[in-house]
Length: 402
Image (tube, rainbow, N blue to C red; front, side, top):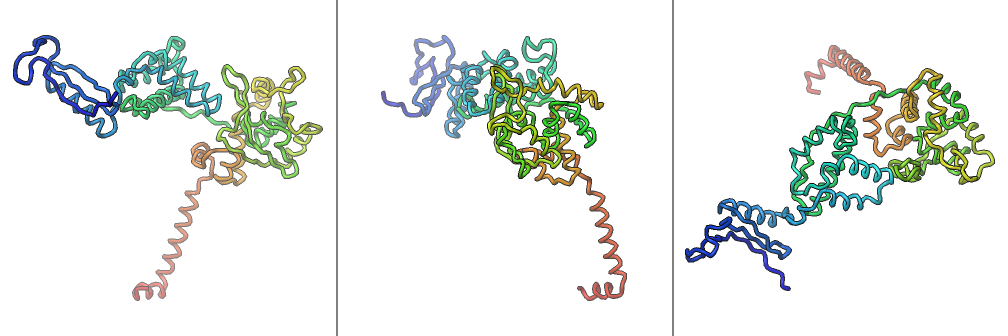
């Protein structure tokens, strides 16, 4: 079947070109806008006024010329249908990331937007819904409690990503989620231990003493630490190679994958920690876990955070740090490293941040404030310049244009 050429026009359905009435004169809407798009299909829409039909047609034709035209049939797809296609494209992401998308879709987003056609999703309705998540939670599951600011932001990010996918797929022309006003994400209060408290905490953790030292003075994330194998620890060079991480994924349990920024890094082992690690590694196979959990059917399993917290939480109370979390040991590592003179790039490498900007955003406030030093240097330079000008040589130089 031959593809029809692109064309457009407005047709009077009540009168023929010679002015005579048609068989349907006075019945139904009078003006019919019609056009054939690049795909060769004809599309029509009826209007009561000719100006409305022409305006609609002009918009369709303009969209084809500028490349922003979208197929009305595709815009009729439901948000859920497109969301399922979108999430299928995320198979390359970490399992925990995909599980997070899935959870947000099923519990927060799809209950409201799942059955809505893409063309019917508007900016104002999205804004009202997003603003209401903090109070209503988005679905019956959260009817009595709102979502945190962080969760609201995550929900919006998923909605926007799905609609952005729809725009790029030419299902709709614009993303109505762009420009949505989001709640402010309050920064959680950080806790930084001193050297003394950190050592007391590690000792109080008992059998997890060495693990606690590694978290505190090597800056590893908990999942990175429990994923370590004997071959990753080089005691001779005092280096730990972080090449994997163990993460809990809803519906799958513990899953091993790459570190957070998908790159391997090497971190130093303090001298005092090397003998403790040597004890952990003694007579262990290269592939054995450095910090194993329970033995199940004769096989070591990954240590879960829950197992570790049993000892860690009690130890935190013992040293007067009730409410401390294992992740705050990583913050402590950053603080102690800065006190020791580490610059931003060194800290970035130690912690495995993707960019130095991320490191500065998170820990910039811990670096010494050098503003007074700059001001003092300017004062010293100004005094030197003033002294030079007060001398006869300085005045002569100015007069001579030197």
